[in-house]
Length: 486
Image (cartoon, rainbow, N blue to C red; front, side, top):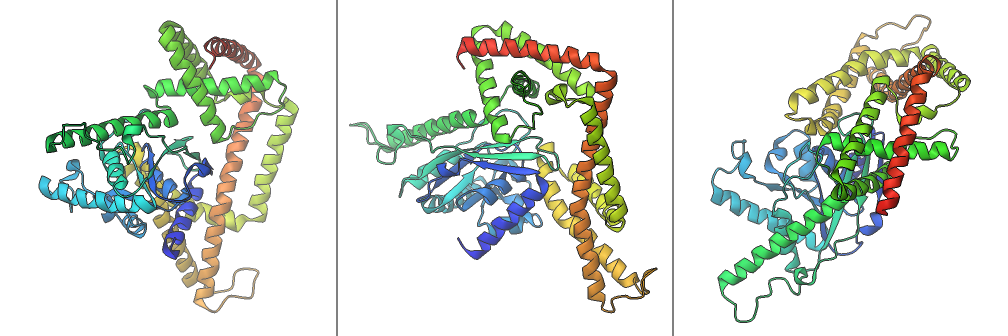
């Protein structure tokens, strides 16, 4: 791996960790250390999907990307730095730089696939077989590009086909969590292996038969990729059903912890969330195949329970919250910590509000205005933040450096060099941004604690009723799991 690629991967990891609260990576051992292959993933979160794969893959990856992305500021530079290959889609023919002729487009894509195939023989190529990013909780219809690329890579090698699961806690939200799961390479059927691919039955050696055999290979491999992506992404029929399954996973975990006497249940790691969702989703599908009515009634009850929690601003873990006295003590500590920050670091907090808050609001506003759909917002927030926040810091630093002509009140010293004043202010801006994230966390925790005090002190009966509902739903879910042997 060259120094340029290492620098780019480091930069993308930094960018992802600034945007996401945490990025969990599992299954790295499933990516072969030698040889080449394809990383195939679904595409639910726009540019963020590519950033995570390029930054956190255990092996350097090459991307095939829509040609229009190469024209975007910063994005185009990153794509070229990563050695990405442009792909020309028919639907993009009206964009600047697009190829209007179908013959030109097919010829350009053939060259691009050839370049990607060469990369896939000794390294890894990441590809999204759906061909477009989307906001759906299920896979789009897969295109044949991934299968054709794999077919070309097989001409002079034995590439691996590695499915990747990309999961987001709240994919559009700043400081949420993400999970990248690398799964074992697909075990290809005998007739899809390199030594058997394209075999023509005896007596059928015409060009037409060979072409039909190649198309059959592409169709079968596309279906195999789709099957494995379904297994690793757990797509649901609708967002309502997805949220219900997630609620089942959450309530089962919380109720089980309550019955085992766990004093204070923490938020589940993303890997645990994914594994729990997989079990719940498998059980639901099996029950729906046996008796759809039972499955639908359970989903309806879970939805009502979830809505009651949402209206109260609670989650399953809050129903077994700490005793009232402990909650009061925690709220007092949070208030004291926030007050100390205001008293001891007033300049940092002030700069954080005056400089970073307007810039952050501008990032969010710009992402909403520039994105056609919500699926693009996370990636746009990353890149807009990369542009707007440093520009705001630099502008504020220059303004302070030029305006700081007299010593501050109470001090008889002022840096004479302009660059010293500007550098000091710039460092203060960066520090205020980092502390601002922590201060924002204080406010969230304080609000949650105050809400817990109100619920625990004045709505105790409501909490007890929800706890009984959770226990009844848990018993029903566990009963189904035992019957279905999930």
